[in-house]
Image (cartoon, rainbow, N blue to C red):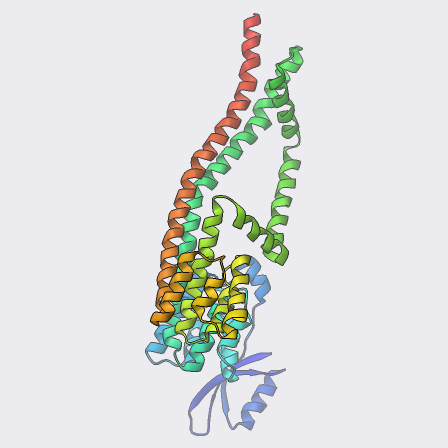
Length: 402
């Protein structure tokens, strides 16, 4: 069990820290052996991170932005890392973050490296984040690195926000269209079809097909919805929790006509941003490329980057030569890497390249949404029109008979 203590030494100087012990008496004996007089000893209750993640969410990008900004500020004003963490523990209410901070404090009290606390949470902190903190800790540049991380994370959050915002209207439109169709096949079609069947009038074959499908859907609507929800939940689980699912989903996105370019631009943007940050932190170029391979999210690019690191740079090739061998990357990217390497400012060019692709992604998403909206309206209008015609045509024939 973990205990947090505040104690005074023989000279009256106060000290605090964490200690693992089976019981309170063990902590008191250990403090006595160190000639420390305990002032306060409290058990530290670590929250169940799995339960907290399910009910309150894990550590999101906004949390990481706050942490990096706060730590950069505290280091700038001269506060030591342990004191900064202790202040955060008192003020941060989110269980997942609080639990992480307690782990960080425990590691620092034991003299363990700072980055190891983040490395134990690979779902929340990327290899880029962990290696940047590790390099900064070894070089003594934590303040600068935390500042750069906060800027990078803010850009990442802004890009995700743009993507979500762009697709809000199409999603709302899809939900409204689904609601209209469910209403028609559940309430309108069964009543109209029932009138014709009870009166003994045979509607045209076109209307008969629509009535049959509508009656089947209407009578089994809850079963159909339940099956659809199960399929959606199973697909989401398969994609998020299994490597096969992630690869299959990635290959699907990488081959869709309109999404393919956006998906690959995102991969180049991640690669350029990651490599730029790691190079500025002073990591070796082979390690930088290997870490970037884990962040791109596209199998072709990941394989190409691993080839560059293992078969190119490790064998003495320049970065430009290694990149030019891999035809999967856009020609502009390979050329810029080669030119900027010779000029000696590769990290700056990669940062500029990341910003360029960021803007390009935003424009492509807007163009995609501008195509999706009228396409969805046409599909929705077509389906409603088919149902309307299947009702209007037999009614018209019925009225002409009278």
